[in-house]
Image 1 (cartoon, rainbow, N blue to C red):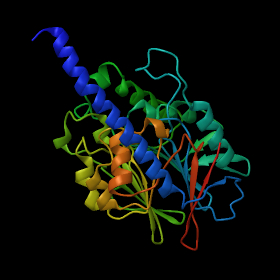
Image 2 (image 1 turned 90 degrees about the vertical axis):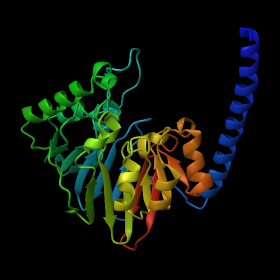
Image 3 (image 1 turned 90 degrees about the horizontal axis):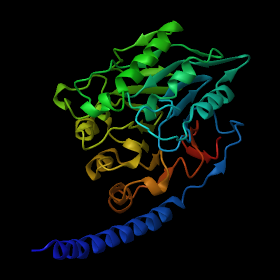
Length: 332
């Protein structure tokens, strides 16, 4: 068979397949939007009329920066994409300025800005890149830092050789040491109290069986509970690393799911969504970048409304004392 005929046959196969994926993607968005209509957003005014037990999902494009707030206590889970990602060869937008300014605006009590703790879920730059700017800003004090020790055995070779994730980790640990901020590498396995919230970490020790699966396999999941309402922040936990299967039953039923890996391929399998059974899903990305298979699982299988932080310019979910979940957006 000559090359022209092969190319023609490939075109006949690929073009209809891509068209079908495009049509299905549009269908899932339309149906997903219909699910979302039963939830209303108001622009955030920071007047705290619904209480101060809140999860702030910052708009850092397709990266994670999540602020936990309860009774005047604050903790930052990841810090978003920094300005100098080693894997980028061209200029791009980081979010150091936005994250630092947001922390200074929201976490200010009297004349100080304080974070009770910070957590780096894993060593990818789109999660911990802006920690350098945050930690070295002397206007912000930090009580302690949870950073699981970087394990090169779990990472893929290119993550170290080209993405320099070990260097990113080492720089942050050095920043913390220079400011005498305690670094806790042995993360607690038991839940602990944080204001009105109960917080529990998952995957505190990466199983040896995940050797070579990539740094996403080191991701720390965070479960946050107040009364009968629960959120799970899935960092970059995916089915493709095996973590979803390992953790799903331990996590159990939740009301809010911050879906793993920004809604990219390999995250939010139908089995994981079925076990966690969330009422609402948040994706730290823009809707157009969420992979079709993830949209399909959320919309067609789990029937979960999902909201993108980029399209909403950040989202806050307040856990009210009456047991309601109240969402606001445009938080920056």
